[in-house]
Length: 448
Image (cartoon, rainbow, N blue to C red):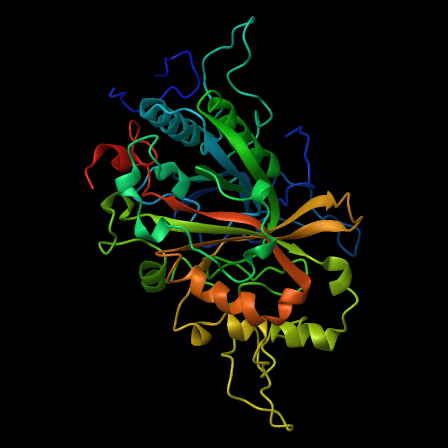
């Protein structure tokens, strides 16, 4: 149980009891890419105090009256019926962490989830772990690296892995069918145990790298004695668009990624494909969603030697514009039935865009929320250790992710240049509704 002097000063669950260091580059200040934030309260300020740009005449141009979005001040509501960070307009930075629970005491686990909720509520407002003054002879409550920074639209999303539902906490009867292991999925033979699985996960997204690192670092720190870090991943440059106002980004292969992704403002699609409803066999997940992550290494050096025509054949799209090879612009509907002069399909039958399309998968769709990543240089090969940290949300991974990946993992032309090396599946419960609530409270307090 926390006390007013301890980190996470909001009620824990009842026991049954601008000068700054950065990494991975600087924040991209400005208005570009931060639109469509129905759930976010963005800070807006006038730009009259901003240095004016030079003009051809040598005179400073006037920017009076112009406004810009202050990304540092932008906040996303933490409390709500749904967890933020799923349909929230995707931010530019990610830190993802997977943890193993080390305690066998269910009360300790609940207290951790309460402590995390209290911390996340503060972090998403740009606040430190605690407002209480530190004690000279004790470590500071907060690690301090985000002090003086803003919230930068931080969201913190927490999930539960299938391994949490063993016999340690009396949760075996509450394992949702949708969270049961996916079994053998084509493409998973290259998965590495040190990047895979975990009892709990934390997805922190924001428009500043230090803000996401701070959130995960302090939550892992608060878990000491209850859970330990299993593996983690930093991500940069969102690799999908989750709102109609966001442009489609490019992956590290240089192609626009996620053109036909579900957008948060398409409420019918979100309800049909993302949020768990009354159909669930575990009502504590009603209103939640399932997160599937895959760490997908790209063979970048090999890709860079491939000719443009073959690259476009693999994706089924033009590299420069993102338009399908059947013509039009990026968002032009793809004509999968069109054939060329040689009688062959214009969009190759094993192209990535065809195999991942709803048309090829019985109408199945996913909400993608991935990020590019780099781990620097592979010490064994000397090659770049980089790729896509793919994240997607859905109502049922068996009926959605597994269906799509089974097709992609079997015959996708892209498989020559990628390998799935890590990931997992987690159940993200409904949102934390108010102070005193915590991540997954219904899991522990309601009968199945």
